[in-house]
Image (cartoon, rainbow, N blue to C red; front, side):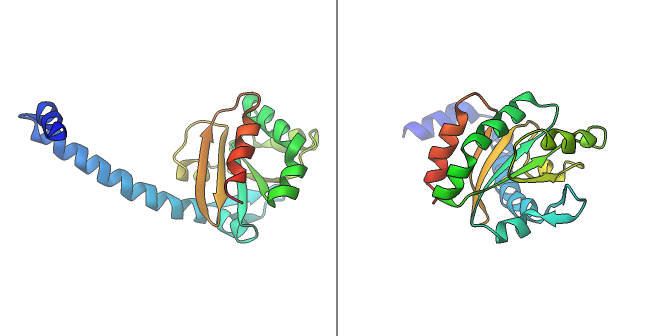
Length: 176
């Protein structure tokens, strides 16, 4: 009864709004399932310039943390540095693989290798210079951190604040 009254109040004499809302929801559901496949098939490059895909990387490990970052993004670098401090323990306990994908474009991608070489990052670094993966994930901001289990995104978080790696680890433990 309550739902009917609320719907009636909100959409009284405005069936076009209801139709648009239903269409929007249908498109959202369609694109979210399409996006999952598109994410897996997106081509990305290694630091050596070899082409690979997330699907190939996922096939090598059941549990992955995928971090989108950029050289110009201080929170991104802080997050990856914080994870570096605990990454070896995480690997021992969960068998997780961290894959950090730089979204630096053609103007800034030449900064990736020097930055990585100056850090103690012992994880896979990939390049998404065309932002194909970033678009497939439907994000505009970095850092974006995902947990992928058996090819499915089971956790998604944007941004970084000190200590967020602890919450990420707690989430990670739910999926081992």
